[in-house]
Image (cartoon, rainbow, N blue to C red):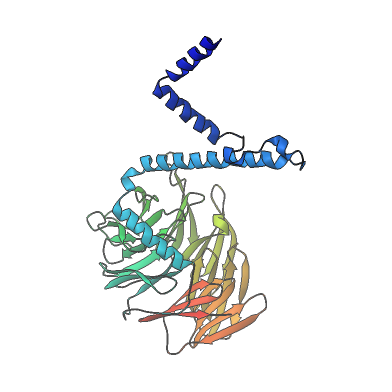
Length: 439
């Protein structure tokens, strides 16, 4: 019997180091995902019988396995992401990430104040990530919500205009074939007159980062060029009418462009709708005409389910079926239009008729919420739950539901009014932008 045990002991001692190492490795993996308590906390289920609560020991063991499985999945995900995107892992991109994170923090800590910049009468303004983007023929500047400059570069545009998304700034030149896209601190894409032979007259962003520009060609009065969120041109739509506005509905994959055709009978507005913009095989185009009216602006409402057009004679709202279906036509007769507003949170227009100031307002769902006279001289209008009116003396905010108005005076400051949110309007002048905050 002694010889038997000695032989087995000798056999175990003669096992190769590799097998011993493998056994230890597998043992560690087994322990990692085992439901048994760890050795340093040696508790058996029987130990809980006195307390009468084995349930919590089982829950603890389950959470242990779940946490370690999630940790393993995280490691796999990170490795997979690095392999797929290894070309994007550069020093410059890492630097951009840190700077962009800083700008995002500012956007969440808004501090209303007065922003000062170089004086110029040719500024173009747009809200950008809680701050403001400003461009003129000399400079392009982006301010955060706290007033910090994240982008301050020399402008390369003769007649610049700016539009913004949550991520990018797009500047286009209405006197030359040139546009460029920037993030918070650098240019990331551009096209020059080498590819664009004619001026860019309008542009817009979709919610997913896609964008479109309006230009023309030797053969066509208008060319609408649509780009994916990866900044690759997808298609170009040619037209013999003058395109005055373009919009993208990323949710339903629709691009709309509003044109004016002089024609023979007083002119007409032509609304072009292109469906399935990202699918070449399913892409289709339909058109809708409004006789005798000149288009001013357009916008999607009701989470993209409705489309609104402002003309010089009416506000029209459409539903999208297989074709445009008009559901609202609010007509008016104006001596001149003093202001208009077309954003996703509403549509509004102010006009003068028989020496009286009128305003018409539709909310973000496409419902008309106001159509009446006002007693002040209106220079511009905006809407975000409240109606904002820029007057000769300052900014007036109207609470439509209570039929109340609050006015704030501005000292010798005029300029473009931008509605920041339901409490704030920004008056952007030649040398400063003033935040007007209502309580």
